[in-house]
Amino acid sequence: MTGTTMTTTAPKRANRGTGVIWLLLGAAFVTMLNETVMSVALPHLVADLDITLSTAQWTTTAFMLTMAVVIPTTGWVLQRFTTRQVFLFAMTAFTIGTVIGALAPDFSVLLFARVVQAVGTAMMMPLLMTTIMNVVPAHERGRFMGRITIVMAVAPALGPALSGFILSTLSWHFLFWTILPVAIIMAAVGALLLKNVGERSRTPLDVPSLPLAAIGFGGLVYGISTVGGGPEAPVTAGIVALLAGVIGLAMFVWRQIALQRTERALLDLRTFRSRSFSLAAGLIVVMMAAMFGAIILLPLYLQNVLRVDAATTGLLLLPGGLVMGVVAPLVGRLFDKYGPRPLVIPGAIFVSAVLWAMTFVDEQTPPAVAALALVGISLGVSFMMTPLMTSALGSLGPSLYSHGSAIVGTVQQVAGAIGTTLFVSVLAFGTAQAAGSGVADVAAQAHGVSFAFTVGAALSLIAVVGSFFVRGAAPVASAPEKAALAA
Image 1 (cartoon, rainbow, N blue to C red):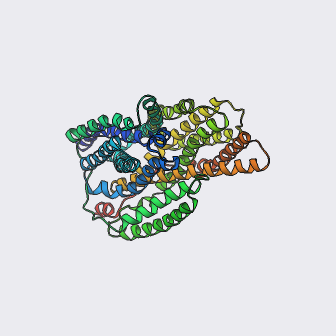
Image 2 (image 1 turned 30 degrees about the vertical axis):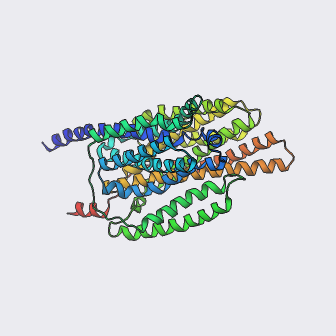
Image 3 (image 1 turned 120 degrees about the vertical axis):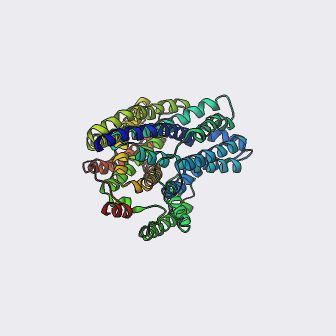
């Protein structure tokens, strides 16, 4: 009888949670789509608002910084508040930010709108991952995590394409007006249908941890992004921010370790006691850095070296995200059947092989090669992300799911900043080195691109080696869970 009860209860629990997951997937897709829609609109903002390009870029930079600051707090938020409360807060913030953006009369209001939108977006992905870990049986988590990978890949890839389509006939305000009805519908459906999952705790908020998290993660992401941002970037400010970020992060970590003893940490770092979680987090940093670096490098290569126009560049790069979205469900099912290692090892090798192949590009390389390179990198990363996220969170005890989700989201933001800065910095160095040797401008830039891919390829070897150590692991129990098991 006991065995029968367990067999019938698990599917019912999974079925109840499936509707919640689909709702959260839709909301996450909308919010992440919004993350990249402004990239194509920058020239329009410059002309319409009479600002410089570096100022307009803050619509993206501020969004990324807000994400980096808010995501580390979601570990505590998801334990303290219900699924419904967090969802409604996130969608309300996102919707309010969208309304403000649609009505923005000047750049300062637009920038504020992007920050408010980012607060809601930052909550959504950790909420989705934590919900999956709470309601989906272990043998089906890969399939559901694969759907998260679809959102992470397809939504940002479609953002620039949607933006270009809208801006071809309408003003940049309609980037917000187009998303607004969908956001309102998602919020309304959630208010009517969303049910709470998981258990809540009454952990008090540690207020001093908030500014430490903001300084640490915000300073780190801004500093990394700025130091290698090119000749117009405020490098001195970036270095100061980077140093402040390192100090703030060290103080944040010290405080969290102290608070863990009394179960009051804002972000519980006991997740790193799991070997599987630590290794997966490290590999995610390397892979996301490689992917974000390629995403920032390939458009520059296509437009500055191969002289491809912006519209064609967008179309050439679109298949990369779409392929990742198509492959993700298959990877999830394969993970459920075979585990992480048979997927992660070939994925890491494939990404590394593509990066090494791109070291041979020059000013004569066909544009299609760049498109195929991004497809290849996206394909390899898709074979890694779902298994790594699933095995990382699966190695934790239930009380650490929300903290693990927050950490995974945070390292992705930091990895994006690292990848972008590394590739752009090496590109600039390689180009300057070639130009100093008397090489023509286009050829010098092609050399810089090749040199940047060489550094990225060398970095990818770390992931190749690390992939052979990936394995499933038993969950790490927290102190309360150990006490409950002992009782």
